[in-house]
Image (cartoon, rainbow, N blue to C red; front, side, top):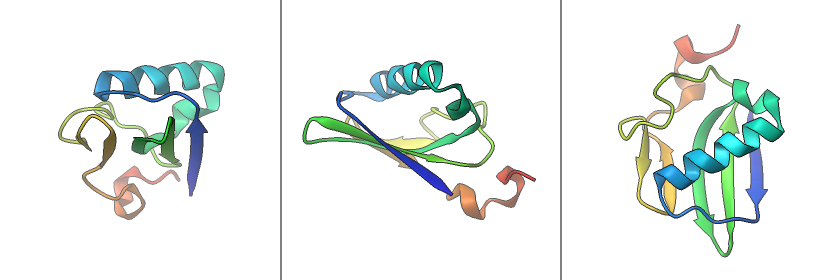
Length: 87
């Protein structure tokens, strides 16, 4: 299951995406249980996809969430990674 959030602010790099997710999780604490699967900045908004799977400690590392300044996505599909699924 995925949750999409369209946010009226554009991030410019990984640190900006991390900051935006941190602020969203402060505002909506339930998001702390949802893993970031992708983040895209385009047309004046940010689109973030959260997956209802376990959040790893390296959620935002360059080897887990790959991309450039305006687009990041997982290197693997959490829905297919059995050890990451919630039970």
